[in-house]
Image 1 (cartoon, helix red, strand yellow):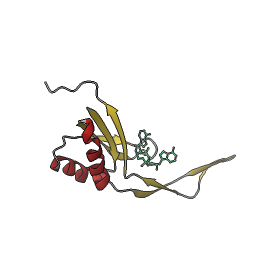
Image 2: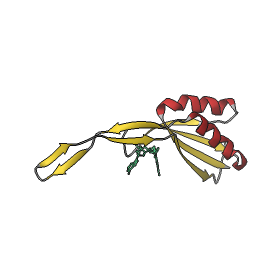
Image 3: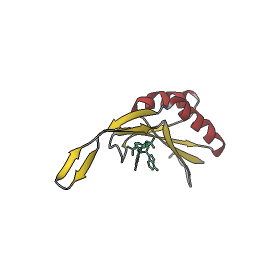
Image 4: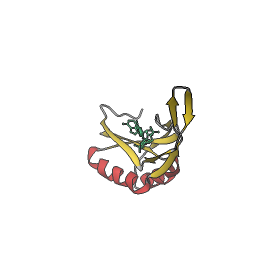
Length: 107
Ligand code: 2BA
């Protein structure tokens, strides 16, 4: 068994979990925060048999969209910090990890 861990945009989370449920996959949604932007995102956990991992990835891929985000930057000068041009960052579609599950039980 494998655990698919997918970090996605908050706005795509509903569509992703609905699509997974429709195809018969159980999932859990966690509210998370990206370390770079310090903005909210969503992490979805899906436990599946190894042969179904690709199907799960395709479903997540189909419902996750990349977005451009502007972030403010500051420049350090000898007399302190002062604001400079904002920088554009492309976030997502989805960041996906697949890990082995040593043991899975429902008790
Ligand atoms: P954040 O850490 O908030 O990153 C948001 C976006 O900022 C990233 O989009 C990337 O385009 C950019 N970015 C991140 N770190 C950067 C850096 N050190 N320098 C320049 N730009 C940087 P994505 O790559 O699509 O990542 C979206 C979210 O997925 C991330 O949010 C983070 O929560 C998660 N993530 C991405 N890679 C990860 C990893 N290797 N391990 C754990 N979480 C990861």
